[in-house]
Length: 314
Image 1: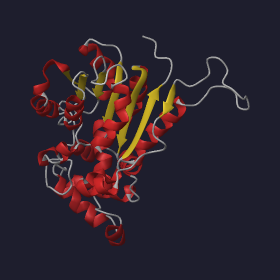
Image 2 (image 1 turned 180 degrees about the vertical axis):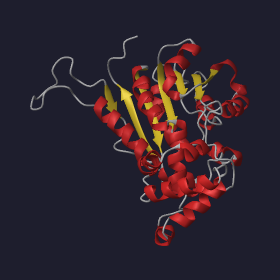
Image 3 (image 1 turned 90 degrees about the vertical axis):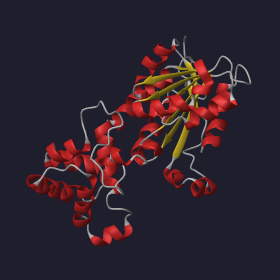
């Protein structure tokens, strides 16, 4: 949805100048730099801050974005630390930002990272290789209740308790180290009727483990208020989420930010109670059929965009 994201963010990037001069764009989940490359090409005046917790992604993006020279500042951190990234770039506010949540296509396509259940690989799943916790650690050390909670809460897995019991039995025989053994266990544990109709039996468990390893929902809950606080008036924040837990957090934050604080029943907002933000998208936008055909991974994306319309003191 690259073109749609540019369309949604263009009013914020070009509000001072059509080429983006004077504007600051933040890519909070830089990945290999695809979205940022398009932004840099379309708006030759915009200054860009690219953030990623994955040092491998930053290395790839650095090479890809090298033609744009000192317009690009790359920062190795999580997107909930946007204030630190802005400080490293020598600014306090920004005009437009895109957060493309979850695991990136680049990470899925690197088998040794352990994100993909279709390939037997080490049970790692860390977006930042310096983080201490791996998926193997979770499987080999979490108690039954803790593991079942992760699978149920983060993966919406109906058979979380049954899978947790099977994991605890198997790890007594031998600790988990590779994804292939976990996938085999899931095939044995999840009933055949569910396997035939519920998609790949490993999908929900792998999602849950990845979210737990990387603290994704905790990071998102901290990232939204941090980004909104640093957004200039007229600026826009776009979020692309891929599963209901993420989208629910984004929706809740955006709705709260766009509500008037005037008591119900009054015909106009009282002074100081009008919202500082307005929704740009109505509900969550989804990828078109053409987009999904071109990029099947976009089928689950939900896009929400918010704009600051007041406040935002310098």
